[in-house]
Image 1: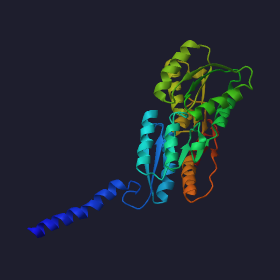
Image 2 (image 1 turned 120 degrees about the horizontal axis):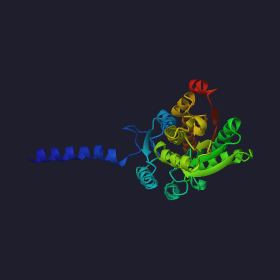
Image 3 (image 1 turned 120 degrees about the vertical axis):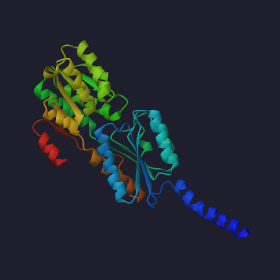
Image 4 (image 1 turned 60 degrees about the horizontal axis):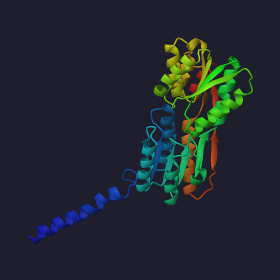
Length: 314
C-alpha cells in the first residue's frame, strides 16, 4: 500500500515541472529555448500588414525565436489589452503598429517600466521617447508623390481626401499631399472625409462626397484599401472615368487596379523590408548596440508605366 502511494506521489511530482514549465515560461518558443516576441497590428485585414508581419517573422524565426501576431481590429482598447498580455508573458520585445498614435502612450509606458523594448512599425507614435525606435515609410514623401502624379494629369484638379486622422502615417501623407498640391495654384482641395483606411468605410464616405461635390475631379484616399472603396463608389455613381484616384501602398490589389485602368497611381511602400529592419533593430538593441530612433524606408510611385516592373521586382 505504501509503495503504491509513494509511486503515485512520484508520478505527480514528476508531472509538476512539465506542466508548469509550459505556462510559466511563455518566452520559450514552441518548446525550444528561444525567446518570445509579439507584434500588434491595427488590422490584419490588409495585405500590407500581412507582408510587414512576414518581414518581422522571418528575422525572429531565423534567430530561433517565436513571434505572436495580434490583430487589434482597429480597436485601441483591444490593442492595449493585447500589449498587456504580451508584457505579462515576458516578451523580449514588442512591435507596435498603433491604432491611435496618441492613445498608445499608456501601453508604451507600461513596457518601458518593465524594460521591454518596443519598436513602432509603419505608423509613428507621438511619444517617441518611450520606444526603442520607429521604422516607417517616408509618408510625407508618399503624399508628395501622389500629388505630383495627380498634377501631371490634372493640374487643376478639384480633390477630396479620405483620411484616417488618428494615424500618424496618414497625417503625414495628407501633409505631404497638401504641401505638394499647394505648388499648383489651380488645384483645389474641396473637403477631407474620414475613410478610416478601409474599403467598407470609404465607400459610403465617397458616395456622400460625390453627391455634395458634383464638380470633383480627383480623390486622394490614404491607402489602397480605402482607394478600392472610393473606386467602388465612383463606379456606382458612373463617375470613375472623370475622377482620377491617387493613393499610397503599392499592394497587389492596388497595382492590379492600376493595370485595369481603375486607379491612376499608388506611392508604393515596402512592408516586408520595413518588418525586416524593425526586427533586426530589436536584436541589435538586445546585443547592446546603438539603434537610431527614426528609420525611414523608401517609397516609390507606381503607375501604369512601371506596374509590371514593380511586380517583378517584389
